[in-house]
Length: 495
Figure 1 (cartoon, rainbow, N blue to C red):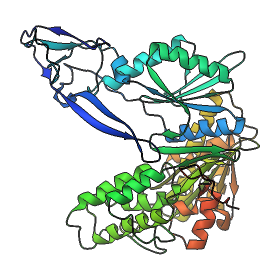
Figure 2: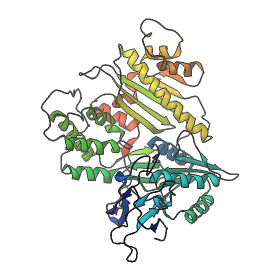
Figure 3: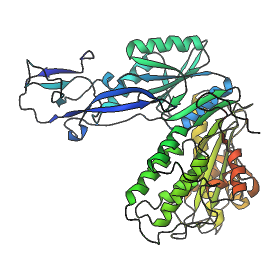
Figure 4: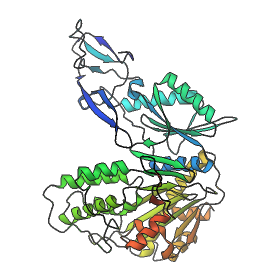
């Protein structure tokens, strides 16, 4: 009512009037205690008709790698990182279309009970509410001098004579950092005048990710989220295991089908979000997600092993380290013909900014490669594209790289194919777009370097490894035990 979200108008046979409902939710803190109990009025957007009630939809979601890059820069430059939460964010968006809604339950006007609500502003549940909110926020930021980066539309930058400010947006959750603390405080006050918000102080709990910081860097973990998953699937008392997947284990489509595949799919979906900080389970989760359409009992056993592994490593986190230089390096690896069903290969890649891992992936490629060289070359081309995007983002942030990005590959033939402008019988069938990496090398944009297989740290993203090898690579990738517990106690430092 105070926000003037709607006006009551008499019912005149409007074509489409949507309903609404109240949604009640309990919000929890990072340590599991109750923060508050929340009630929200939500419109039934599924009753909207495209072309009549709305035209386009858009929800602003920041890339996880962008968040890690900004946090790496903040740790490297020792900037303060603050967290904001917009109160009733969608109610700040102005609607361009005309939308009618029945009066909500419990708030029917006694004088005008037959009137309907003509929405002036967006409300949660509407198809185009996120787009309306983002347009309003974006216009306000641009009017204050912010620049919207092209590499990631959720990242805004502002440069002045005495300050640099970066702003990350995930719908209504905002991360802001910069080199001038006083300017950050004044900006937050200015933003609060236009949009009512909560200043949550230093970044500590963002989208279910717990953030801790000390003199050795920043730590991102999802201990509470893991605990919730284990309790949901009744695995909280299971015995732990050293690795998320058995060495040499081959998952196939053949076997006894699960009677209820819903639980399998729910678990895979929950684990997918966990890979934002736990890259050590990326390969196993990706491998099992390939069988979501028709899982078998063997696949469910693989899921249970991942949960057992998480039970023993619930306090592990991703360490964002302060670096001497913000060099951009990447590691690429491929496991040729690894799938026994279709002989497609697994490709893994990881990108480092300084000493911090900011991006990684493990996925099965779409084509069958005729040789290990071709599989490594295709994986290398994918890594080059990710490196180019990261380089473009850093360029927009005006953070010059001290050296050219370096790509490490453990296949000499793929490195030669990427560096030399030659075509021969063994490579002429490779698509032209795969030679994108060769153009990058010839233009002196990147450097492709050979690394022995023993030092290939992307190895854990393409195959199952032994306990010793897995832990060795996990440490190199920055997955370590959190030095600070949720209750503030300091754990023993890991050497």
